[in-house]
Image 1 (cartoon, rainbow over the protein chains, first blue to last red):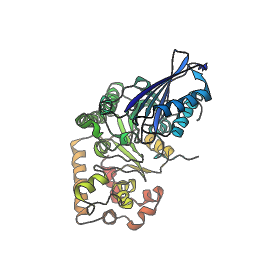
Image 2: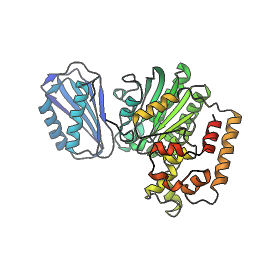
Image 3: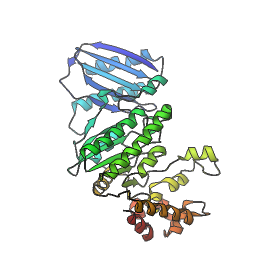
Image 4: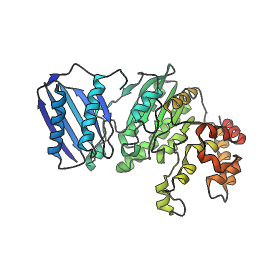
Amino acid sequence: METLAFTFDGGRTLPPFAPALVGVVASGNLEVLLEPAQEASCRVVVDTSARGFGAIWEAVLRDFHARHGVAGLLVSIHDMGATPAVVSLRLDQALAAIAGAGEET
Amino acid sequence: MSWSFAEMSARERLAAVVDAGSFHEWLPPSERVTSPHLAQLGVPAAFDDGVAVGRALLAGRMIFVAAQEGEFMGGGVGEVHGAKLVGMLQRALRDRPAAVVVLAESGGVRLHEANAGLIAVSEVMRALLDVRAAGIATVMLIGGANGCFGGMGIVARCADTVVMSDIARHAMSGPEVIESSNGAGEFDSRDRALVWRTTGGKHRWLTGDCDALVDDDPAMFRAAAIAALDTHRPMTLEALKHESALLQRRIDLDAGSADAFELWTRLGVVDAQTVPDLDAAEVRARRPAAVAALANGAA
């Protein structure tokens, strides 16, 4: 297992929200937990079963931050070898879950 | 749109079974109560250790509820996972909800956690029996794609009511376990039709092992759970003797039979060969009157 941590500065700080969990820790899948954070940045902590993919994680997460520009956010990930596309979709799903809390998603 | 209960995640199922928006979780993912064993083995943990527990409303009545995530470690019960179930059950003894409902999907003990997992499962059994003995309805909903096997298979049979879908499976040893210990001649785990007619919901219904057979539909699981809220089967000496007699009758009836088809026929199921092709509603109507009477007699 490998633990990676990234911080992306800039972006709009999200209004307060309840923590949200999407996805499942299963082969080719991952779970993403979003929580509000004090810092005006987006911090991401990844536990992954696949070693040696730090550069790809950074690219995928940088793309997420560029697309959504959100801050005040802690993203915690448990990964079991998901592909970059699956990771991006889960991250988008997690943001949609906190945006649409209380609505059908 | 109709959802497949089997294909939903544990949290999706939970939300669909209880009254909308009523679930209050204990030890939610943000608490990070995760498995210490998996971390030592270098395996990623899950924030909820594969089970969500809490309280909710069901048809307006307070229940305690748990949902196991079969995709994480096959729903295996580890030390934390088991402790969350036990804590919920022990809290039920204190707070006396109308029922404890478990959405079970598990291969049994999480092998990574060895003895800690085994002890956890035995504690879950004991706690569930305590809740049942306290007169709180205990309900197992079995409809996940991985079925309900091993230690959780036993836990399920400790409950007042077992609800299964026609595509659900419930047994002690899983197909691969039987094949690897006794050979493919004994049980071919790749023969899916054989696996389902030996462990599947239709078989459990026709033999009286489950109390309700529903479609693979969360609305039907919800309705069955509501119907079970007032079902209590006290574990008296008489009830246990009755259960024992039922099991003996099963052994006698099954003597020399090589396949579930034969057992169904001996039980009085009409046109047993056609059962695998029937939907849940048709199979519900096929349960022999004698089996229904015996199953009800155990109540």
